[in-house]
Length: 151
Image 1 (cartoon, helix red, strand yellow):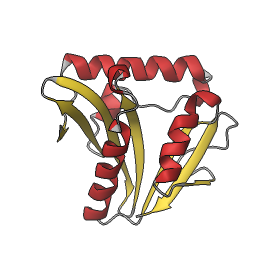
Image 2: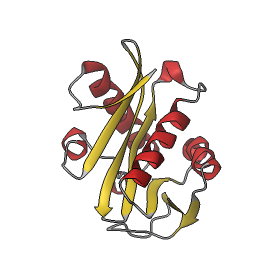
Image 3: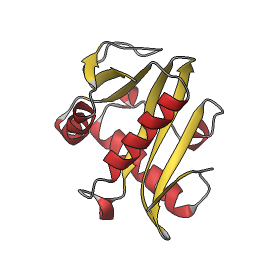
Image 4: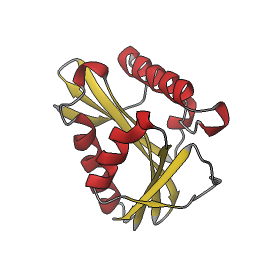
């Protein structure tokens, strides 16, 4: 398996991101969907990674720079065919390590609060993330769960 910085041009990556946005939109009200589209993920403040097994895309994740000490985890997604194989965990560990190397002091994230998102909550909690209030430009929202951890 190989994790690599990705320019988001491969058809498998575009399809995975499309599935991600579809799931977010089908499980949260429109005003509560904070997933980045492709142009948002290509912004200079964002580093986007994909995890591959040869030519098969297994998952993706991103880190958005909020400031010199604070980053936000974005677009964590595992391909349906690769679920329950530790893919999200590998990507999350990679993102946390990258954040350490970049000198970040804190990582935060926003995810949905509904049952659909409970597996993500458990993953983030297993890596030391705890619930917190809104950060950055986010507002309090019953459909959002905010989490953070020191790096």
